[in-house]
Image (cartoon, rainbow, N blue to C red):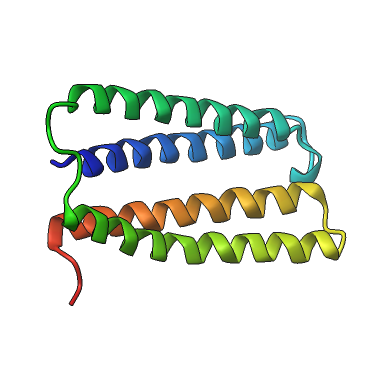
Length: 142
């Protein structure tokens, strides 16, 4: 398993855990407090997931980097796979940003605007990680 494949796998796991945890907390709060989703205190859990997940990913990346520091990190194939994955994930993330900007212009509630960005960014990252892992396992499409 290459360095890129390792940190992509770690990021995928961290992202999935964070995403599911956030929604579990928000839905649980909505159900137990008998509130609509837009009135739940969602800001704290989102910040914890974003900051905590980012910090955990950075520490994981550092640990993997320190462990592999005497080995070559990437080669031409890794760069091609990363570029291909960024293209796949970037489109989804870009759509989420566009949707959020439109929602802001139309005065949509902050909850929905923030969550469109959150879900869209997650889906973009998920698509990029999925494309990366598939390219390592099955090769690049022709």
